[in-house]
Image 1 (spheres, rainbow, N blue to C red):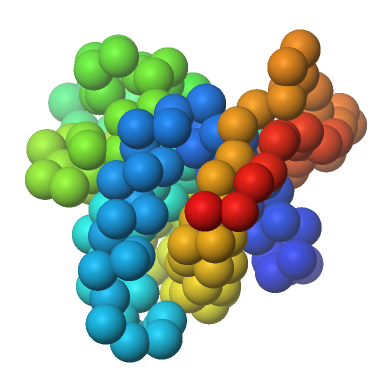
Image 2 (tube, one colour):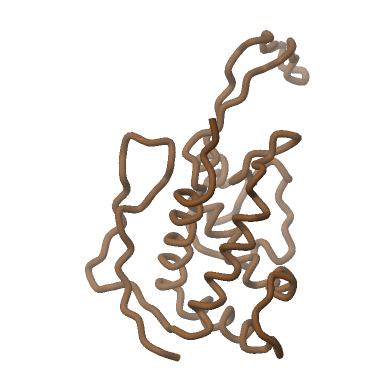
Length: 189
């Protein structure tokens, strides 16, 4: 059973637009980075755009596409010095949203601060929008490349702000964190 591709990437792109529309200064920094590229956008040069990648990482931190990730323990596993052992066959679930909003892991966890990913200091397993370890999402690279290209093309040509009175609302009953809509005002740059 796979959850990948369209729904998760669409939800993630919606969140990037949502956060950038509320942070014109961050949007402008990103636009300047994109305008500094001397060539057409390619997957190779967009992959090198540090601020673009930081914006994506921060959006995925604040709104990871999956509300929970499950794994099955394949052998008995002792949790450090806690005295707790997880028996083989046990389903283990974690919520990236909760981990990503932990103030012990990320200062000002509810604020959109892409700069925190320019020189990250957090533990590698504090940031898990694609899972972690050997079971990392197989579509991660594809999704990130798709997001880089879409965001670059949008931010390069348009300036956007959140529509007055808009409040984020989500679909319920799914493991996906999917906005019902994101309403923004758009104008050409």
